[in-house]
Image 1 (cartoon, rainbow, N blue to C red):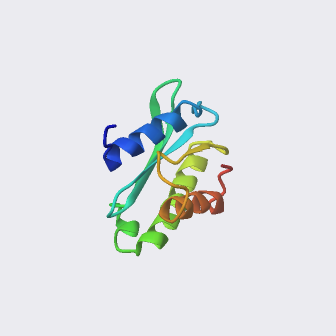
Image 2 (cartoon, rainbow, N blue to C red):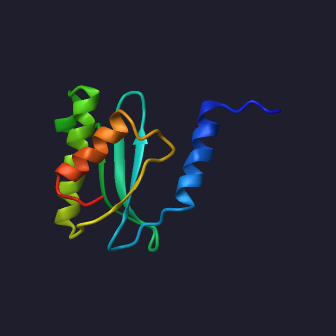
Image 3 (cartoon, rainbow, N blue to C red):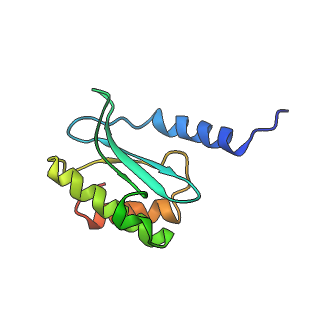
Length: 117
């Protein structure tokens, strides 16, 4: 029996999720990355292989906020950028993370921003 590290287990979950989710130009995939310091995400068109919009915790208005508020505001900002790009719906890819805490706050922020997930 082999011992798997935490990143290896997350990668296995991420690949399992990605096998079922694909983003298109009309309904892109919201790819989330969560670190200990912040959260970042991007809207990805997997068919063309392009990033349509992105948001990161290192941006000015998000940098100094508490983590949960930061995640919600990042979701709203991504939704705002998506609507500016002409996107109304998206598929949420949690990236192997549990749908809980900051990842959930980010998804709720995207919904509050007007994007259908």
